[in-house]
Image (cartoon, rainbow, N blue to C red; front, side, top):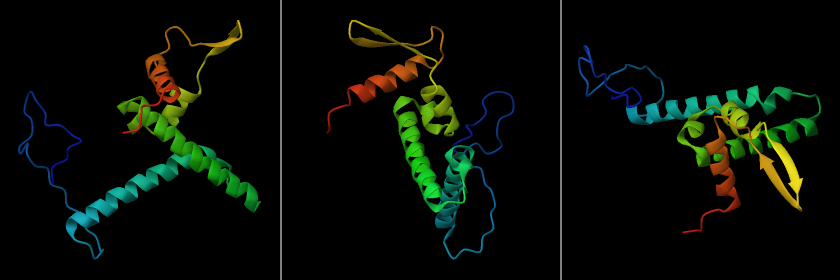
Length: 148
């Protein structure tokens, strides 16, 4: 099956068969080949989500109290979904990144809030690399598009 994540090499030697890349796999599942591969890829996505959450809010589990664990689990799921949505709204880079990247680029903002004439002004750093992504996300959330 062709691996679309790896583009064909242009230059010196390149691939022997640039149209196809095969990889063997063994499974004991009752599914057909395409169904088994789809299930395997879905399982890998779920494992990445669990690893992201364990590095973030779920690092506080278990606390020994059921209600505290339930609260951390709910807050962790909500923050994960909000960060993924913010990343998807911002850029393709942030949409594909792990949860830590949108958190450090879009949430942990080194900004200063100033008040003048009953208005709040947010001063972002001058040469901050994520300035355009953050302002695009802010403008999109402040003025959402009209429903279709």
